[in-house]
Image (cartoon, rainbow, N blue to C red; front, side, top):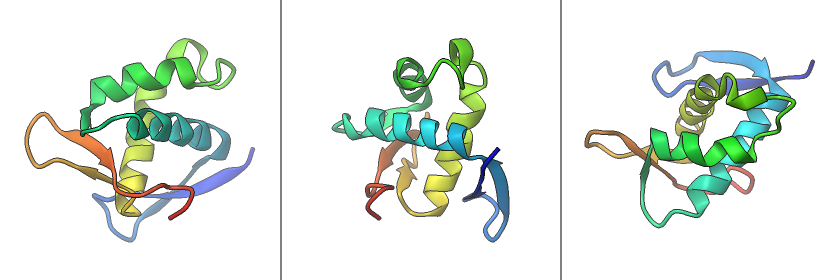
Length: 101
């Protein structure tokens, strides 16, 4: 199984290696959902939006999708590709395309 190194905006300098196929599937689904939005969206909107876009073989019935959303969110924030609003509930938006920097 191929691994990919991810960062965590809450723990600068710390990295973790995770399943690359699941990470990339979730990242692509999140980017698809977020790029369709005209303003920042909350976690529930992201979760509901990504589920139909995820490969059933990797996320049967959406299993573990919540963990992977958080993993990708924290990594993209650490890389400056995703940002969160300051108010509650937190809402998220893309700052730049993760594929094109």
